[in-house]
Amino acid sequence: MELNTIAPAPGSKFPKKRVGRGIGSGWGKTAGRGHKGQKSRSGGFHKVGFEGGQMPMHRRLPKRGFTSRTAQFNAQVRLTDLDVLAVDQIDLLTLLQAGLVPAGTQSVKVILAGEIKRAVTLSGIKATKGALAAIQAAGGTVNA
Image (cartoon, rainbow, N blue to C red; front, side, top):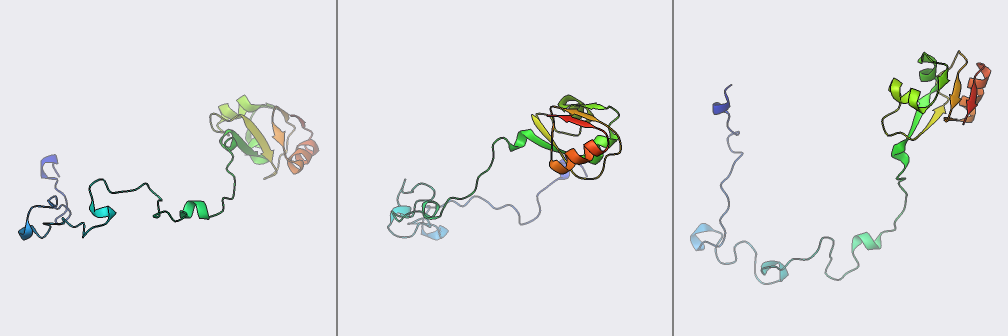
């Protein structure tokens, strides 16, 4: 295949429809806009969601739910991931360097997933109740 031989698939390209160019074109007179009404006139359109004065759908429906704007800065780490780390003193910087949390993370919480077999010291990192119990059972400490 050469660059000068590349062409679109047959039937995928159509010439631009030229409306308002006489009866013979099939798109003359009203140019496909029909007769009368707001949509037939030049500049005769309305904003998105406008329903002719009727209360629009987005205002009729109840608004529910909440999306946290800070959720993107929070991360979770499993106990198994901590067990793999070579260091005993673990903080946010250690987790960032190990690639266990994405860049821009501001707070980390250790969750009870897997198990930990060695004593580690967490500083500046939170832990769930189950994870905290597992870390303490292995001889570690958490300084949140």
